[in-house]
Amino acid sequence: MREKLARFMVGRNGSDQLSRFVSIVACVALVISMFMDTDARMAIWFLAILGVIYVYFRVFSRNVYKRRAENEKYLRATANIRGYFKGLRERWRQRRDYRFFRCPSCRTMLRVPRGKGKIKVVCRKCGTSFIRNT
Image (cartoon, rainbow, N blue to C red; front, side, top):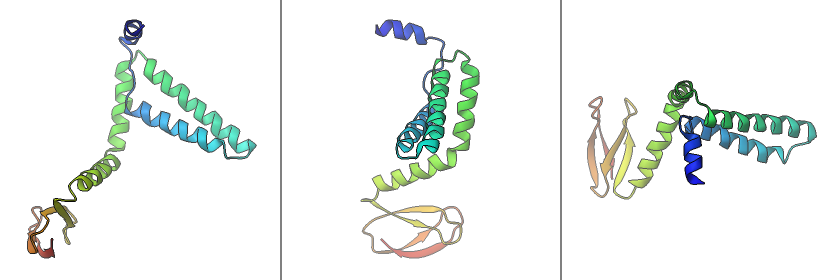
């Protein structure tokens, strides 16, 4: 059975980031539609079903070049948002070993080791120095 599915998917786009995003939005819309009145429920439900149909269209599409171009456009449009959350995740992982400060002039995020007391922090980007307690 697994081999049949693998043979069927050869030459098809498969799941990518845009498909995952649209499927999550469709699932959230379906859950939200459960708590709405009848007119709004039908409209949101219909949009969610269209989203699911679009996801299946993208996953099973044989026009891989076009689907990749759409996915690249989505990734470029959401790069800043994804980068922001990636930075938050990295700072959260490193929170025990490092303190994070923003440069007062250029707003660059700076990382300094914890437990060093008062130190002079110098921004690598603009050269501004300031004193902080770590």
